[in-house]
Image (cartoon, rainbow, N blue to C red; front, top):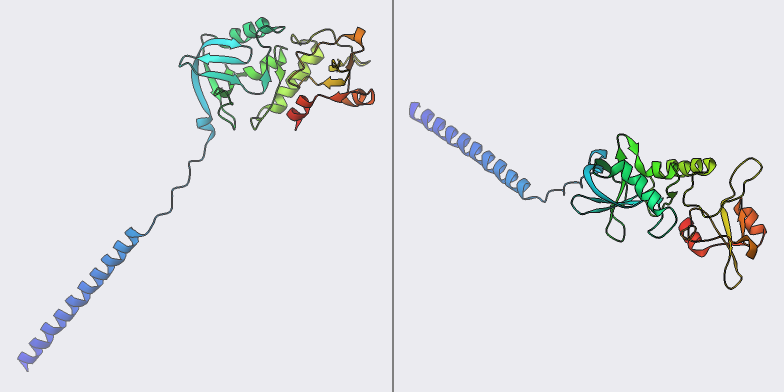
Amino acid sequence: MHIGTNKKRVLLVLASASLVLALVLARGAHLNLWMLQPREKPSQQVETPRNLFSEAFVEKVVDGDTIMLRNGELVRLIGIDAPERGEKCFLEAKNYLERFVAGRTVLLERDVENRDRYGRLLRYVLVDGVNVNVEMVRQGFAKAYHIGANRKYERIIVQAEKTALRKGLQCWLDGIPPKKGDGTLCLIKGNISKEGEKIYHLPSCPDYNNTKIEEEKGEKWFCTEEEAIKAGWRISKNCRREKE
């Protein structure tokens, strides 16, 4: 009886050990299978406000809406359009921007689109808490000009333009536009083409600065688009594309 009992104990121990070994092997196999399973791709990094800002040193000012950084990158100020070289108020706009940023480290803020079709960085420029893009328009050295998806400060820039127009600070305006009875400037340019076609331009239209009003030829200033249309003018095709 004693010998038989010992055999049973040995068999029981061996069976238990085999069971434990089987469990360990099964667990290891499951772990290996889990490790071999394809992982989910990590989610794309979400852009946070922190990486929308960067500091940079301004090497020089190119014109009233473009600057060059120390690393050679050109930066186009978002939401504004200043006179080009050879146009009225080019130097005034360039000099005013230089007062803000030339030879200084500024804060650059990105919007949705990073670069324009010319490869220039698209940024808002901040100096001592002041949005320089807005200030250029508010002081009349640039006009509001929005295309594409970069429209974070569009409402503020458009309001700044209205402020400049109300105060008569539009350095880029050609001629002296008439005023309505309430003092509001009538800024829509009613131009007559060489073919005799009557075309009007809004201040936000691409060709506005280059359009000269010669009233002796029948060209006019209009206070509203409705007024221009009733008088027989149509909006510039270029301007229509910008509006769309």
